[in-house]
Image (cartoon, rainbow, N blue to C red; front, side, top):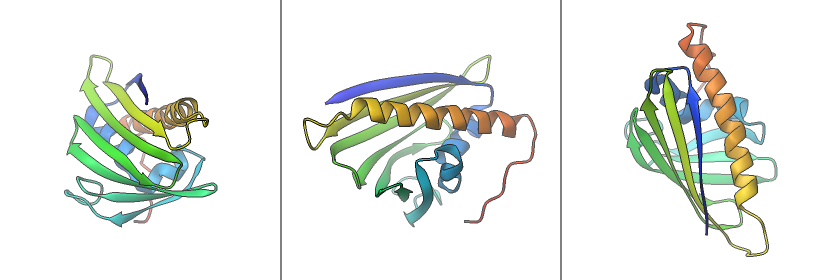
Length: 152
């Protein structure tokens, strides 16, 4: 098993950052590996809360993820159900208010299905790219610029 944590500080309130991270409709804008994202099942609270199942259509694969914890605006957790050669992918993302805005901690446990395939590095790189784009979007939204409205 590989385990890692990536941390970042975002100049926006935890509520804003949390909402950007959980808005599946905006994932294709945040990470170019994702072509589209949709909900297979709404969670509680709708749409992306506990029990939500998201389908991320990547280049060459469709990944399904399930929300396993939802505590807005403090943290959420999810696990990958299918789509990549992984035996386990569990993540917890925490949002802590700071004087600068929000401290984000993205903790991942990942196990590859094929032991010879590297899983930590590609996972880390994808998450770093997502976090960078999400921070920019949250900071733009917090600055009062109009948020891009996307259809459900």
